[in-house]
Length: 108
Picture (cartoon, rainbow, N blue to C red):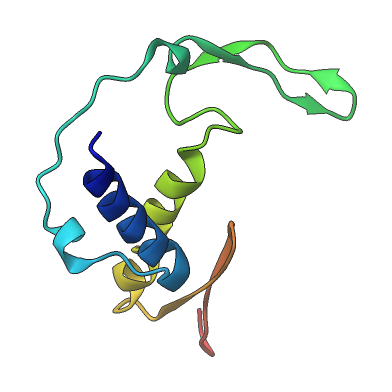
């Protein structure tokens, strides 16, 4: 990648990171599917609750924990939540990787 291209990408990424805002142009972009790398396929997961292990399951969706792309993808997805529910009366509170939703009213 040419140095100037890298500089432009880093500036854009840092702008999104600092402000938390995605440039409007990105929301209108044409999305080109990129095939998943092999390390995302056939991953195994298992859950332990009260000392009991679940059966091993194979999962393909998502990105592995610790993947460098995971926080960026998470931010892109949850960034649109407040706009998605703004006309519903629901309220969303977000901080880091936590979010909460609630609805106020006297008769729910």
